[in-house]
Length: 133
Image (cartoon, one colour):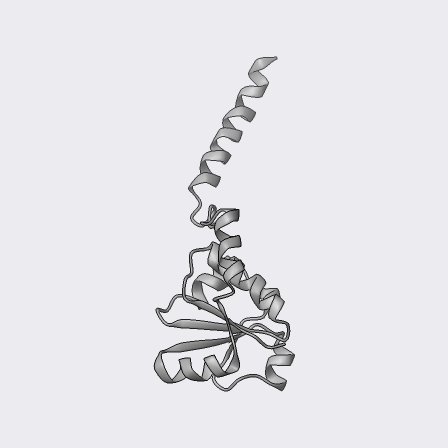
């Protein structure tokens, strides 16, 4: 009777080992109190005036997180479109790999803040949110 469970047990152990070895599996770096401390300061939310100042002093990438239709209708000049609904670990790693600052925005500031939390949890430190409402 025990012999028929041995292959199952071996398969389960191998699956656990494989899952633990997958890169990006444990992508979240901050514990709850760390992320709450960062959120409480709101240092990552900037105004349009602050954005204008940043564009004059440093390299930034504008990331419009609205759906493609909204992006086509109206967006900031030079912005790239990474819709919230298509945000995943692979698109994040591909899109946020530069060394400059990234300014993310969408119609709702709260949505951009959710993306900021995800990016911050993944270890990105050069992300700011443009206050849009």
